[in-house]
Length: 547
Ligand SMILES: Nc1ncnc2c1ncn2[C@@H]1O[C@H](COP(=O)(O)OP(=O)(O)OP(=O)(O)O)[C@@H](O)[C@H]1O
Image (cartoon, rainbow, N blue to C red; front, side, top):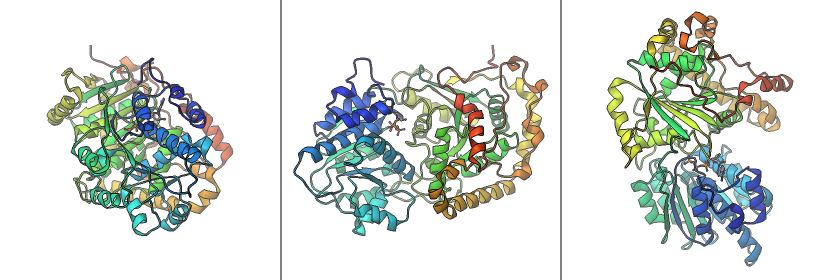
């Protein structure tokens, strides 16, 4: 984040309407990347910017983009309405998120600047209708944009002035290389471009050659993740798979992790396994992956951000086989069926106030670690990452640490020493619950969930458009397989709680389900413990530490 000497937004020559929007968002000063990038962008420079996850890169390009467009409209010759700004992102979720952020910043100039997302869930006919109005800024994935260009529903050969490539390090790995090259043929010869990325790799270099002209490179001299005062990183060695489940159960059931958490696993199958396992102890969670319809994915993210859920089990794109250069994703390495090739969970999604990221499965690459970890400690908020590691995975974790430590060489992931023997009392129930989660139960649960999500997503689409409140009440964390739920396991008898933790912990309480009645929902909302959650202190207590 920026230091106290930072150039404030008010000194950047921004339109008062943009300044008002920034104030409404509660941003008292620009982040480091915003402080560096906005003035250069306003001077008309092409930018190649690398800044760590959660550092406010979206506004770093959106603010100058809006300012330049507003200025052009106010002072330039009167020209017909046209698409002047294009934001390319690798996933549909990011397209939605970027559009929301740009719209928020453009709140007070919505008459002058219209923003559209062409990767939204709408069918292409309704998108064509939107495009006919020639929004000033268009956000989308390269494939959608290209498809509209090829159908002539979108043209910007002469009008486009600004191009943004967000999450640039990812675009090629999502298989967009060919689309992007074809798309560039539709752009005018001269335009200003910004390339934003959390990591620099060969793909960013290749994109730089393709897209930028004499750019200024902003490679902020900051670590890839926030420092220990903001982000605490731990690792815990679990002797067996069973120990991982046992430890996770204890952390969640005894509320040793407070606030919202994101659990990452490496396959879809494991996300449902974990969900069914936790469900038996009345620990509600929802799964988030590219197999679910876009509408559901966006709804889950939005409800998580609003505090409806404490715990989401996510499977990120890499592990579903996303990183097959130049090709669209097919089957994942673990045989998972292809999911939406434009879905992304760990990359770029702005989950709000996540207090802990738990790598239940070790991330496949150091980059995946960085992006997962980047879902917490965003902006100025604190956060914790806890990585579960099996003895056989320790060398792989070592490689991740090597990349993270860079020049420093100091330990990055501190040991989270948990005395497993103190929670032996839980092992029996844990083993029992693991046994109930058979392959058949997982298959059934997965099918049921997809069916239900499709139903909500398609059949209720129009209904929800008319009744947005009911959409608010739709929950994604209801039991998936009630047949395996064991109500007695929801309760933790005192004698099982490790003596060191008695009186310290708050055994996890089951949340009330939201019904369709708004009155009841209101009541439930006020009982929701997350609403009183304050994201200030250290919510994660490494209790039961070995002496
Ligand atoms: N100047 C600011 N002050 C406070 N919060 C800010 C500021 N700018 C952005 N934010 C907030 O920081 C969070 C992260 O922003 P954003 O999603 O743009 O980060 P990012 O760098 O693009 O992250 P990622 O690399 O993960 O995509 C958002 O919730 C945003 O609202």
